[in-house]
Length: 148
Image (cartoon, rainbow, N blue to C red; front, side):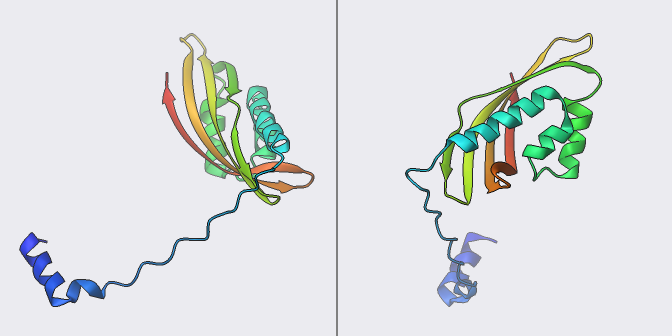
C-alpha cells in the first residue's frame, strides 16, 4: 500500500473499521513469599534425568514433552553416537503461586560424540510448572540455545 493510499484511507475513515484490539489477559499476581524450594527441586530432578540419559525419567518430570520433542531427544541428545552427556543448570529465577510457577534458568549441555570433539551448548530455558501429585512438574519448556 502506498503512503498516499494509506493516508487517503485514514482520512476517509476506512482504516478505522478494523476490529478493536482484545484486552490483554489478566496479569498473574505472583506470591511474594512463594516457597521456591520444591520448584528448584523439580529443576534439579530434570537435570538429573538428563544426566541419566533415560528418556522415561525426563518425561516423568517434564510431563508436557511432546512426542516430537521426545523423538528429538532420542535421536540427538541421547543418540548411541553420543558417548558422554553432561548437563548442569544455573540457579533458576522463580516466580510462583500455589498452583503454578515460572522458572528461568540456563542449561549447559555438553555432548561428546564418538570420535569427535565435545559439543557444548548453552540453552536458555523458560519452564512453566504446576504442582501435582505431591511435587512440581514441568508442563511447558521453551529452549533457546547456542553452541559455544
